[in-house]
Image 1 (cartoon, rainbow, N blue to C red):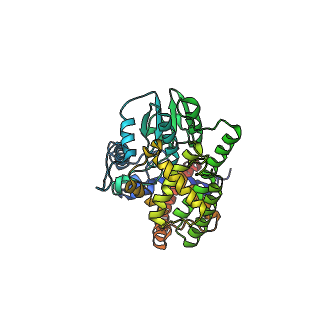
Image 2 (tube, rainbow, N blue to C red):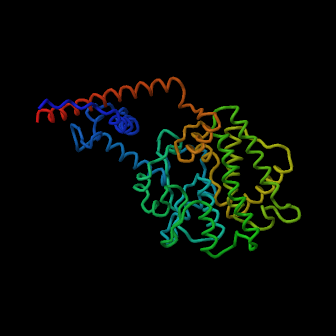
Image 3 (cartoon, rainbow, N blue to C red):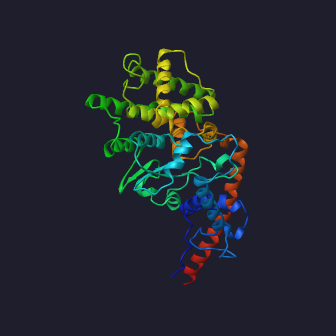
Length: 400
């Protein structure tokens, strides 16, 4: 019988290996170069000189500790970050363990919707701060927009993924009844708890409230965040005009403030006001700071000014307004298009489909060359390791 021919090495073997190397092992290993650990875990084996004290394990523990501290302590805290009404509300709601738990984040506009609804109903609830991002002690407050893996969120915040399986905030646990997604949570709060109603009695008006709440999510805030994240001046201008148009459409549907009242439906504060308030706060603060955003001298924007004046003074909203400089700092990575959060990726997808790419600082030629060189080095090490392993395996098979 002729000897068995040595099988060729399928190219597909390199794909998962390279993906793992680039996404996990390369960034961890290169922060402290140790070749014997660079290859560890690639094939389910650990090649370490000291298995009791590995750098990667210590680094994961260090990062996890920083994340816990970021939610409860002050990291790299600037003096101008003073305590405002929002911080005082968080401190008060975090003191006591209660059956109603709101998993939320102080900086998130979607989470602030649920926060406002809980305050409007005067619900006795426990605030559980969720930081879904990596912590960088070099950044003010340690804040980044670098998303954590879903499993890591669950590890750092027990109970959170049970309330919000997607790992997105807010999540609500009402004595075992768990709901997530901001507007769903708001409607649940309306029906589950006593207190002032923020849904109209008329079926037609309830339908209008739901539609325009969705309009805020699908149109206004997406156009605004695309303008904020894009680094391309032409695209910024394009989406600023789309944002203006969406604001005009929204304002034309609002009640006459002189005859009916300042809120969207007039005198009644409803879910659409709750849905829009957190985003308008950021449009004014963050958009003005990073993009110099101003508004046309038109009746629609005057109507929005009257609306915000009334909304921002309402206690349930005012008690959720955090320190402005602190909020501005947390949005820096969005303004530089350096975010890897789920939301940031969604906006980046809109930008790519519009033909503008990501346009971030991370795509500069120098960084790209360094990244390419690093990938080549990793690929070479990975290829050599696989070939040796494959050769040993097939050599043994042939000798048999």
